[in-house]
Length: 347
Image (cartoon, rainbow, N blue to C red; front, side):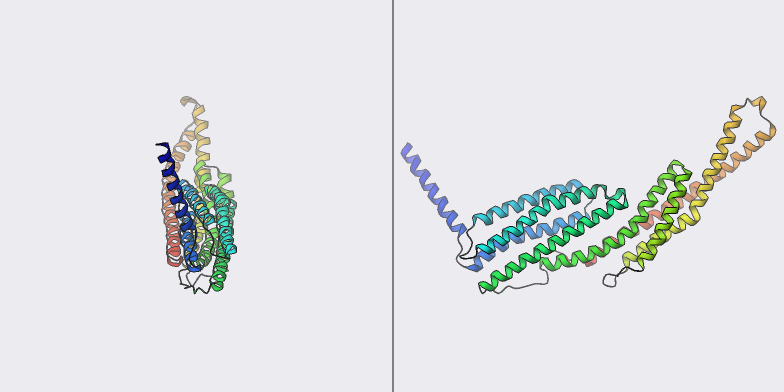
């Protein structure tokens, strides 16, 4: 029984060895190229989708999950290529492919991990957003350079082995180059928009707390940023005659200017009136009814009427601004989505 078991085991080992040997040897250069190409194509398409996911997805958890799965896919592909015997005399090409995949893995493990971290805090300040966009730009450039190096190695391999490669307009390198140019324009315009947009959020915090000093300071800063932004838009190059993002940003900046120049002063007047009313109310509340003069009572009643009207006017103005603000931001987001959809190459 034991002898039969050992014989069966030996047969299985021989079959496995034979299968492994067949899988790792290639009859010609084209077969090896097809093997490498198949592995690279799967990873390249996944990398391309992940790059777009980082740019578009709002879910940090989903992006992180995709990143980890992609790293594992890359590592499995590298193991498979390492185990496979290179076509005769083409160990250097095999090494170039592995170096390319190793670089991709490194970018995913380190650079993209940093980008995901930056994305989580990017909207907290202009500096954070600028750092996030710069990190994205650097990674995109590294990925494009890596892709070009791989394609150079591929062309050299094909040339050495008399293989004619068929290039298509949809090759990854070209798509990455176009994508980088598209995002470069989008990000340049977005930073102009975001600088005023984040400043307005600080202004809204001041309004929410009724801090007159904070309101005035943030309104002045927003007004300056909006003016600077409008000047900056005039110097930006338009991508393929598509000015949609610039127009959407201009509308937003013009809203911020109108808001700070015309509406915020009215809101500050309300808070000043409210302070005055509270002071009068506090003074009259401290007195017993019998000690209050008619002049004090008339002054207080007059202030009640003023403050009630001011509250209604303030709420009406605030409601109008909220609606305009929502419309402006929605228009910008819609313009951004449509711009990317028009110019980013499809899969």
